[in-house]
Amino acid sequence: MSPASAKFITFEGGEGSGKSTQARRLAARLQKDGVPTVLTREPGGSPFAERVRALLLDPATPAHGPLAEALLFSAARADHLNVAIRPALAAGAWVICDRFADSTRVYQGYAGNVPAAVLDALEHAIIGETRPDLTLVVDMDVGEGLARAHARRVAKTERNDADRFEGRDRTFHETLRQGFLDLAKANPQRCVVIDGSGSEEDVAARVWGAAQRVLGIA
Ligand code: Z5A
Image (cartoon, rainbow, N blue to C red):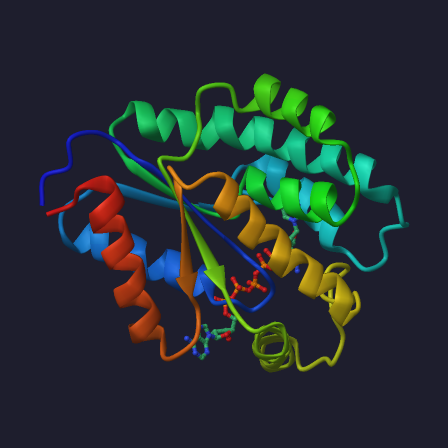
């Protein structure tokens, strides 16, 4: 496969939708095909942003409201872009990012009521021209997604608790799901909704088909 130029691909979706799994699989497939690929995530992806991630996800962090959250996610994103994403794209690598600015739009904007004008200004200042070429929105039944995320957490930590975001009620997660679907509808030129049901292989085939179609991969 010979890509014309570096591409920026983001994965979005709700809890346990399987997007992290699919981001890893797509990165592995591209690498196997000889495409230099960087897999990264938000919040995180740079040393500073990983520190902000730890603060944001810690259940012990005091409540600070959606606007403060949006600013923290954005501060992490500014560093992540400067330290990792832009240098990788400039070097010709494809960048696959597990969550990006659409998560701020949906979690802090759609669900948290931070005004769109505030998020527009943050995106303009922080992201500028570094917009995704393709955003894969992995859509999944909320109950199934939460069960997957919960099972993984218990297996990993042997604890039955949740991080600050997982711990919210089901209505919140239904709102998020609708938010991602609305966002995809409003941005059809770069967003593709991927059905997250079925086996990992089934979903990976849908992701690959979308990448081929939108990015012109042979
Ligand atoms: N957040 C925000 O509010 N604003 C922002 O701007 C940003 C983020 C950037 C980050 O949490 C939190 O920050 C997130 C949004 C908020 N809120 N929450 N929660 P995170 O990074 O810790 O977690 P996450 O991004 O939500 O993803 P996740 O929990 O890692 O889940 P996932 O990526 O959707 O799923 P997964 O890890 O690929 O799979 C979950 C489990 O299901 C795992 O055990 C898999 O092996 C299994 N799996 C995956 N696919 C399948 C299939 N097809 N069948 C069966 N089982 C499967």
